[in-house]
Amino acid sequence: MTPIDRRTFLAGSTALGAAAMVGGVPAVARAAKTTTILGIFPLTGPYADTGPLMSKAAEMALKEVDYEVAGQKLRYVTRDSETKAGSATRRAEEAIASDDVKYIVGPWSSGVALAVGEVARKRKVVHWFSGGTEDISGKRCHRYAFQWAASPWTAMDVVLATFRKQNQKAKRLYLFIVDYAFGWSLQKYVETLAPGHGFEVVGVDRHPLGQREYSSYITKAAATNPDAIYMVNFGLDTVSAVRQLFNFGMTPKIPVILSWSAGVEELVQMSPEMRQNMLVGTNFYYTIDTPVAKKFVAEYRKQDSKGLPPGYAPGASYGCMRMVLAGMRAAKSTDVPAVIKATEGLKIDDLVGEQTVVARNHQTVRPYFVLKTTPKSEMKDDYDFGTIINSSAKEQPGELNECKDIGSL
Image (cartoon, rainbow, N blue to C red; front, side, top):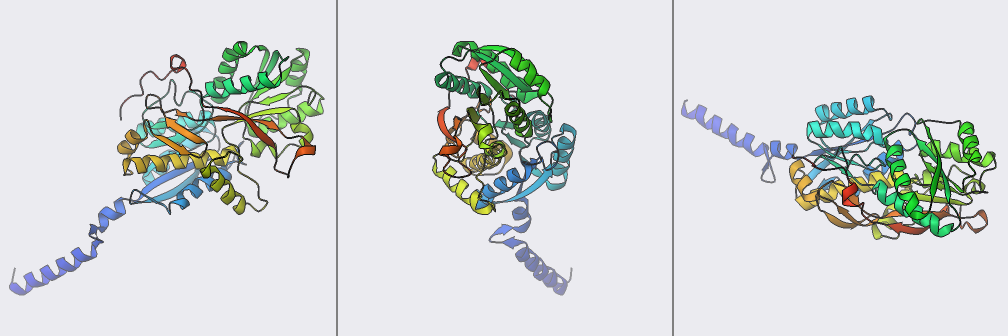
C-alpha cells in the first residue's frame, strides 16, 4: 500500500468508525438493543369486541415508559389470534421470525393461550397470559410462561365464600360451563370447594364457545329448583345466557353468579334489571383503590369517547405488560433468561395491589375481587355497575398445584 493509499484508507476508516459510533456505542450494537414485544389479541372471532381494547391498554403501559426500559428501546407489534389455536400459533411464529419478538402478551382464550405458550417454550420467548386455565401454571408449566390472573382455586374459593355470606339459606347450585380449558379448570374447583362452603352442585351443563341459545339449559336448570345459577363462561356467552335467564323469568328471582367475569365489558351490555341480584367475580374492576389503577382508569376513560371505564380485558393486558416491564427493570436488561430469573419471586405493589410471582410455577399471587351489582335506583351514573364487597389473595394449596417441574431455560 502506498503512503497516499494508506492515508486515504485510514481517513476513510476513521470516518466510518465515527459514523458507526453514537454516544460511544456502536450503531450496530444500539440497533440490536431494540426489543420487540408482541400483543396477540382477538381482533376477529368470538372475542373480537375485547381485542382492540386489550391492545390499546397494553400500549398504554409502554407509552408510560416512552417505549424504553433498562436503557433499551422497546417496539410493539400486534397480531390477530382470531380465538383459534392454529391462527394464533402461526402468527406468533411468524412474528418471532419476521420481527424478532422476544416477549408475548396475550391472547384471551385459555385454550389458545396454551397453544401460544408452546410456541414460546419452543422459541424461548417470554409469554405473559391472564386467563382461567390452571394449566399455564399447572401441569403444562414451563420457564417461559407466566400467569397474571388469580389462580382458579383462589377465585372460586372467594366467590363461593362471598355468596355464602350473602345468601345464608342457599344450598343448591346449577352450573353453566363453557366447554374448553378455562371452563374445565374452574368447574373442577367449584365442585371441589362447594361442599366446604355448604353448597351442593345439583346439575352441570357444558356449552360450546360462541353459544347463543340457552333455552334447553335453562329448562333443565329450572327443573332442579336451584338456589343460584353459577356461571363459568365469558363475554357474549355470558351476556346471552343472562338475557335469556331474565326473559325466562328465572332471574332476578334467583341469584346469578358470574364467577369469572369480564366485568365492565359484560355488564355494560345488560340492563340494570338483568343485573339485579347478581354476584360478579373478576380479576379487575375499575374502582380498585390503588395508585396505579386510579391513574390507568383515568387515562383510559379520557381516551374513550363515552368515558367507559376499563374492565378485566384491558386491565389484564395492561397488567401483563407492566409485569413484563417490571421484570426488565428488575433484571436491568431485556435479555430473556435474565428477565425470567428476575421475575421469579418478584414482589411488587401494582395495578391490583400486592403481587408476587411464585418461582416454582410462575403463578401470580394477587387479589381476586367480588362485586355486588348496584340496583338501578342506587346507581350514581351509567357505569356504576357494582361495588367490590370482598377480595382474596389466598394462595392455592401447594399439593393441588400440578406444576411439579417447571424445567430449565
